[in-house]
Image 1 (cartoon, helix red, strand yellow):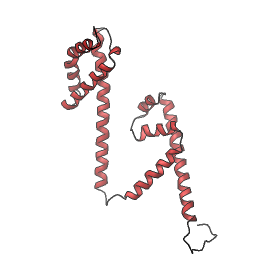
Image 2: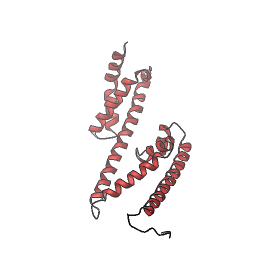
Image 3: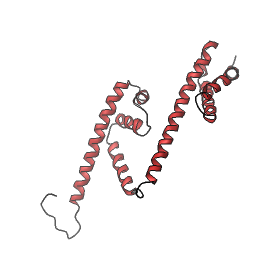
Length: 187
């Protein structure tokens, strides 16, 4: 049996069961997306699909479970982002964009001073919002190792930010306008 025939048979035999699985866990639209992604993965990894017919459905359910978890995680991120935007809009006044831009630039400069492994650990947890176990999987290390890496990366970032802040204060003290007298006293 060639690849396309095997996939067609797999799809016909298991589509309804995988759809029911997804529908019991989420809304109809998300369930259909989960099933589509599940069978896309099955197509891409057709060689990984068990040859034993009794193991195919559990394998597909496992793929669907992971796809559904990713969909739910994305949905929660979107909800949190929407909530944050709502909080910003209902604040006392408009956010100071200059402050936000400056802080982001300072963070970017401080982050750039770190080793790439530290940067990636911080980005996975801070920007991609992965939990410790997920970040460990992404970085191909144990959860305990990831916890240590993340802790150390946060400490290094904190020191880099403090150093940048001290440097900025030092520069602002040294700035003198033409004609202004410079005092020898420390601020």
